[in-house]
Length: 182
Picture 1 (cartoon, rainbow, N blue to C red):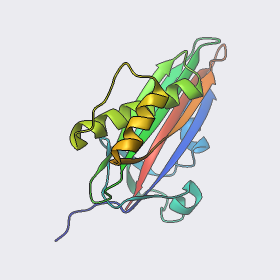
Picture 2: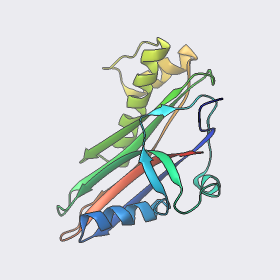
Picture 3: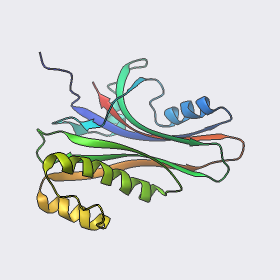
Picture 4: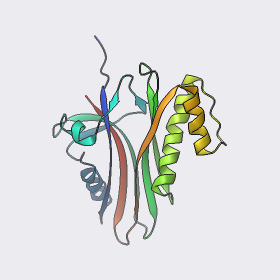
């Protein structure tokens, strides 16, 4: 018997605001179109032979109440004018029979671009460690991407990031998620 391994995954994000912290999280899940699912948090392995599909396509395979594995980044604030961000970074190896990595990053004060680049870098660095690719921590982002391309071992990195600025009197929650389709 072959163990359960997802063949498709989609990325999604959302933001929620409410006077109650939990309801703010629920609103973020609704904004990401995954509030109707029973989410089980899993670690950060991108399965071998898995394909990234658009969220709209992935959601067609899921039913309300279904238990679904999700890699999720979540951040929240109730501070006025506080910038929060959540990112899922993704690094896919060129050899599709190998697994890739997803990373979760939660930050304060970072723009979408800053948080997204960091999330991609984090996922790529985890993948580099198992592929034997040198990872220059102090190199510029463009230099790192160029090195990964030259190695021909990482085919793609990407991210999905949600940021928002806190509003006085409300909880602001941001989520980014990678949903594994059973």
